[in-house]
Length: 326
Image 1 (tube, rainbow, N blue to C red):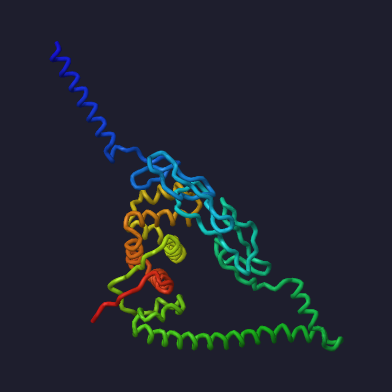
Image 2 (image 1 turned 90 degrees about the horizontal axis):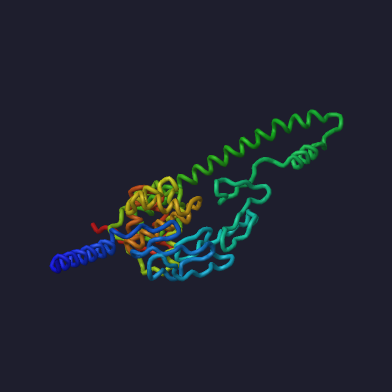
């Protein structure tokens, strides 16, 4: 009877030890909750809106150190795991500020009177080409300087003369612009033959990059980046890569589940979604390899965006390129 009891006790201890081992295995850990974010195998509690993660947690299901954003300079609209706040939007000269930037919401801008938004995010304002009704009436009244007995003849002449003059002026401008464009393309093609690495591309017009036929670099060198320089570099990718190509670029490293999880945590905020995805790139590849991998993948996905991004990073002294030797 004593031997049987001892055997049962030993079996119970073995089963308990096995259970502890299974629970501590990485695969046995539960996924992070909706109010948590993953960091180095831990599940840290998200910081509240208006703050960012200054120090990550040291144990799962705890919150690290959260510092507030700087008023008027940065914000976070939702609970987050960001290592720094999102930059506040700065309204341009042709815009008015509808709502200033606070700790939890970005600034809202609106085009000034006489301008209208040319895109969905109202980043570019264009002058309204339609003449104001009062200005139109004033222009018509200013033509009444002819003989009072012949008012209809003067107005009728203006109706025909103005369109003819505008047509002739527009045709002349079109011819001049066409000649200048041809001259510009010819000169930039000659510069391109001397090599893209020469540094002249920093001042080129991004709209003409498709016409360049340059030698692809065999090596991209990335400098040691500070946290602020890395954020500025990520902002260049977020700004230049078209939204319809973003997921395709991210799938180079991220799984579809990773992308969908980040989107679900930050709905209706594409900039924050994109930044969170790039942070995963950095955590998996490191700062330098992350930038090199992003550029290499973008070169195969969207050539125009690749030239815009790489040219901007080169002008900002973030990257340098080494051409293939003959």
